[in-house]
Image (cartoon, helix red, strand yellow):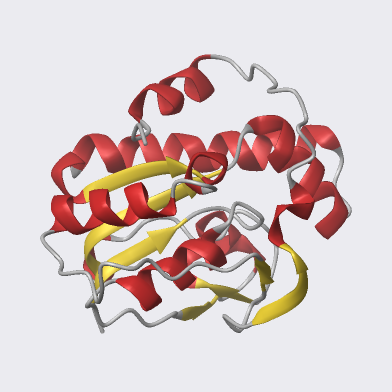
Length: 191
């Protein structure tokens, strides 16, 4: 199965919210997919050790979509959110983040006309601009001129929780993680 738009991003970057926006505002066939990771030796495809993970959290694959949105979070917010989710050291989290960024930069450089890179923080409050940009770049019709959003946390099944989704944006200062981080910041869309 191929999506018109395939979303990619590390866990805890806001991919569920972007899925919600795409499903509810654009005329597309988006389906969330999951991958079975064979054995720990193949874990490099999913960035974290697990036996089952959403495809959106794996390395980008051109065969799964016509167009692609890569979602990231500012470094300080990502580290803070990831620590709450899984017990990893800060160095392990930074390593996961930088490996993801390296893969996203390679994918973007190879398929630039089919890829949008966006930071979760930039989408919040700019959902209409984001949907307009995705609609225009990928030539996909909007379902309505009125954009559907939610202030609720998005969970794994694509449903909503009961708390404000902005809970994980602690206004942590951005952590300079070097050249890769600076490169991805240059490639992100401007909303």
